[in-house]
Amino acid sequence: MPEPVIELTAVCRDYPAQPPVRALDDVSFRVARGDYLAIVGPSGSGKSTLLNVLGLLDRPSSGSYRLDGTETTTLRDGERTELRGDRIGFVFQSFHLLAHRSVVENVMLAEIYGGHPRKGRRERALGALERVGLGHRVNFLPDRLSGGERQRAAMARALMGEPSLLLCDEPTGNLDSRNTEAVLDLFDELREQGLTIVVITHEREVSTRAGRRVRITDGVLVEEA
Amino acid sequence: MHVRDLVGEAVAGMLARPVRSALTTLGTVLGITTLVITLGVAATAGNQIVGRFDELVATAITVEVPESTNGPLVAWDSLDRVTRLRGVVSAAAVAETKDSSNLSVRSNDLVDPARVTTQTLTVLAATTGLPEAARGRIVQGRFYDVGHVKRADRVAVLGDQAAKMLGVTDLDRAPAIFIGKHAYTVIGILGDLRRERNLSSAVIVPPTVGKQFGLRDVTRVLVNTSLGAADLIAGQAPDALSPGNGDQLQVIAPPSPTRARDQAQDDVNALFLILGLVSLAVGAVGIANVTLVTVMERVAEIGLRRSLGAARRHIAAQFLLESTLIGLAGGVIGASVGVVAVVAVSAAKQWTPLLDVRLAIGAPIAGAVVGLLAGLYPALRAARMEPVDALR
Ligand SMILES: Nc1ncnc2c1ncn2[C@@H]1O[C@H](COP(=O)(O)OP(=O)(O)OP(=O)(O)O)[C@@H](O)[C@H]1O
Ligand SMILES: [Mg+2]
Image (cartoon, rainbow over all chains, first blue to last red; front, side):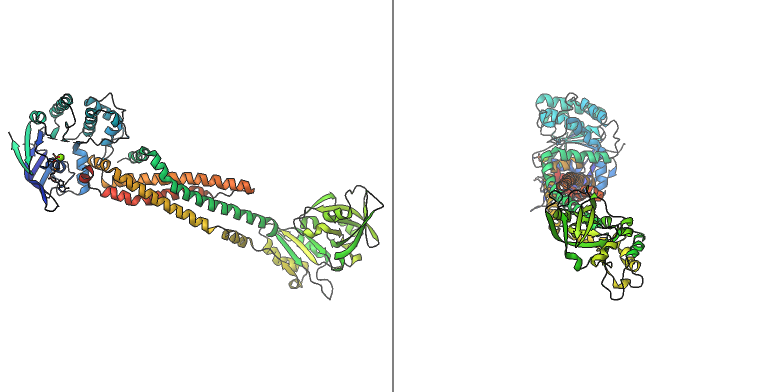
């Protein structure tokens, strides 16, 4: 059996507060290569916390997280950063595009850290934009783009570094049904190419098209059929 | 991360808020400008003072010869021994006594021969090298030469003031003046004196002629040396003039040039230096402040960069470089403005601007260092941020 991309074992995440908040409570699950996983759950249930842990942006308070077979909880900060830049692509709910940089520059940003060659960077960025259907807006500033276009720009940036894992927080939250459809089509396509996708969503439409669905309630994760 | 990417990100960050960046540089511009002007003008003015010292004072030696009961201390022909010393540019021996300093001198006015002008003037005897030794110029006619001296010709040279007072304006017709009963032909007028200015109202005669007025012995020797030789010549001249009795002569030598420069350096206005440093410090605080505000505004960007694989040092380096570039820009602008100001001040004062290359290169570097130091704390704050917190 091949190594799973994600393997969580008994992961807890406590936020120091009065009283302490247990945002993740004994979470264990695996995600295999090419899986398309939807995380659903009510607001405040711990979905973003889980995504931050998966994205190596946050450390679990206890438990083990293996990414592509590498135990990450014992890694030093620098090594986690390297792994994050190398393996993981993020699509944030609020996109986080730099306002004063053109779309293509925003996408190119994904390759400036780590050992990517400078040569051909613009071509690769244009390719990624082409892939998300934004080839006609490459020199726009983000504030000139529609919500759906910004979403796709953020997606192109996430795909730019050729990650093995794509983490999306509410990727269709701001989109109408047609744009949502386009994003979901893109997910299907990416998954066929072997990319592992984890998506947080509120929308039934998104979660039903995912291969697997897990539900979090008060930090407790349950696999849904 | 490639260095060119780092520079590109820093420059882009700076240019994203161009007005703010420009305003942020102001403090540094002000500080660097003040420093460059202060140091530049001080160096220029200092050089000017030293330059004047060099030309006039630093090379001028006067040897006073006291009266002696047993024969003259300095013989007229001993001047040759001084002239021969290495480092001596020109020299002249002069005889002037109390009695000779108010003799009545008369001339026939050429315009109106009937009118007679009588003046009380100083008459002194001098060797032929006097015009050079007094740093003057023969404005008309000529100075007497060795021939005149040997033959004891009754010739005289007038200082330009003396000539004016006596009404002697035209030497073509060989005008005569009378000192006491004797007539002397005026063969030249000496003017533009930059040393021994009192000579301009004197009547100068050859030593062989001066004897008639009691100007028997050398009372003073004027020596001009080449630059830097004054100290040496001041030591050698007395013995050359009066072998064996050199210690009885009184040498008036210029202060050594190094002292002159020290003096000039003391004139540097310390207040302005402090002012410059204070504005530089204020500039640094300004950069630190704005960079800190910028960091706080760009928290989301920091989070994004961390999510894209930026290590803490990459974040720190970017903000540090941004503040350094702002400081550098301030330094470059300040240095340029300062240099222009120094040149302008020099032009207004007709000085030669003295611009130290180290100052021109050092000023922008100082600006960059100010920016670097100012960026340290904000950069640290940015780097310390946890990615999750930054992305919230
Ligand atoms: N830094 C923090 N300190 C204390 N408590 C926190 C912190 N971050 C999150 N929490 C708490 O942890 C719980 C889970 O938060 P999380 O952001 O993961 O929820 P979520 O499922 O993403 O909600 P939403 O769907 O609204 O985005 C919440 O109750 C929240 O209040
Ligand atoms: Mg959330």
